[in-house]
Length: 116
Image: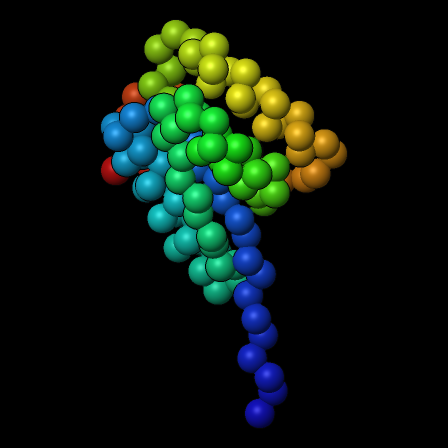
């Protein structure tokens, strides 16, 4: 009997603005798991924008983001990020250097096939 192949593990950082957009990000995450379940195991880390105000949590979130295979950002899309969130995002993305990865941005309302 051939040895079982182990799945590739992807680390995914999910940054979300509030509970409404978190729900949308959860649907996208579920979609990814269903789409790639036979090939990839996902390790999700969830960070609300408000957590980035705390120095310790912001540092932990940055560490996950810099090492993540995929980053999902979910926001209402109304206006701009807060100065703290914007600054944190810029530092975390810059900290990745040339590391490859997927970036998924979910902005705005509940439209599209993944919103059902």
